[in-house]
Image (cartoon, rainbow, N blue to C red; front, side, top):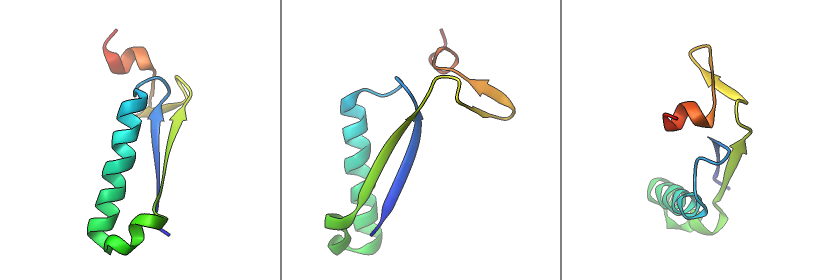
Length: 68
Protein backbone atom coordinates (compact mmCIF):
# COMPACT_ATOMS: atom_id res chain seq x y z
CA UNK A 1 0.00 0.00 0.00
CA UNK A 2 1.52 3.34 -1.01
CA UNK A 3 1.69 5.77 1.89
CA UNK A 4 2.63 9.44 1.99
CA UNK A 5 3.05 11.42 5.22
CA UNK A 6 3.12 15.14 4.53
CA UNK A 7 4.24 17.31 7.45
CA UNK A 8 3.00 20.90 7.32
CA UNK A 9 2.92 23.72 9.87
CA UNK A 10 -0.38 23.80 11.77
CA UNK A 11 -2.71 26.45 10.41
CA UNK A 12 -0.84 26.94 7.13
CA UNK A 13 -3.26 25.10 4.87
CA UNK A 14 -7.01 25.37 4.50
CA UNK A 15 -9.13 22.21 4.48
CA UNK A 16 -9.51 22.69 0.72
CA UNK A 17 -5.73 22.85 0.25
CA UNK A 18 -5.30 19.66 2.27
CA UNK A 19 -7.92 17.93 0.14
CA UNK A 20 -6.12 19.07 -3.01
CA UNK A 21 -2.83 17.65 -1.67
CA UNK A 22 -4.47 14.31 -0.94
CA UNK A 23 -5.93 14.15 -4.46
CA UNK A 24 -2.70 15.18 -6.18
CA UNK A 25 -0.47 12.83 -4.20
CA UNK A 26 -2.89 9.96 -4.84
CA UNK A 27 -2.86 10.80 -8.56
CA UNK A 28 0.96 10.89 -8.54
CA UNK A 29 1.18 7.45 -6.94
CA UNK A 30 -1.34 6.08 -9.45
CA UNK A 31 0.64 7.58 -12.35
CA UNK A 32 3.86 6.11 -10.94
CA UNK A 33 2.72 2.63 -9.86
CA UNK A 34 -0.39 2.12 -11.96
CA UNK A 35 -4.03 2.91 -11.30
CA UNK A 36 -4.53 -0.31 -9.31
CA UNK A 37 -2.81 1.30 -6.30
CA UNK A 38 -5.30 4.18 -6.13
CA UNK A 39 -7.76 2.30 -3.90
CA UNK A 40 -5.03 1.48 -1.37
CA UNK A 41 -3.10 4.75 -1.36
CA UNK A 42 -3.05 6.49 2.00
CA UNK A 43 -2.08 10.16 2.34
CA UNK A 44 -1.69 11.66 5.80
CA UNK A 45 -1.44 15.43 6.13
CA UNK A 46 0.15 15.83 9.54
CA UNK A 47 0.08 19.30 11.08
CA UNK A 48 3.13 20.14 13.18
CA UNK A 49 2.56 22.53 16.09
CA UNK A 50 3.69 26.10 15.53
CA UNK A 51 7.40 26.37 16.22
CA UNK A 52 7.70 22.58 16.31
CA UNK A 53 10.05 22.30 13.35
CA UNK A 54 12.86 24.13 11.65
CA UNK A 55 15.23 24.28 8.72
CA UNK A 56 18.88 25.35 8.46
CA UNK A 57 19.05 25.58 12.25
CA UNK A 58 16.18 28.09 12.48
CA UNK A 59 12.91 27.29 14.25
CA UNK A 60 10.05 28.18 11.97
CA UNK A 61 6.71 29.60 13.00
CA UNK A 62 3.58 30.35 11.04
CA UNK A 63 4.31 34.08 11.42
CA UNK A 64 7.74 33.64 9.84
CA UNK A 65 6.35 31.57 7.00
CA UNK A 66 3.57 34.01 6.22
CA UNK A 67 5.84 37.05 6.46
CA UNK A 68 3.99 38.62 9.40
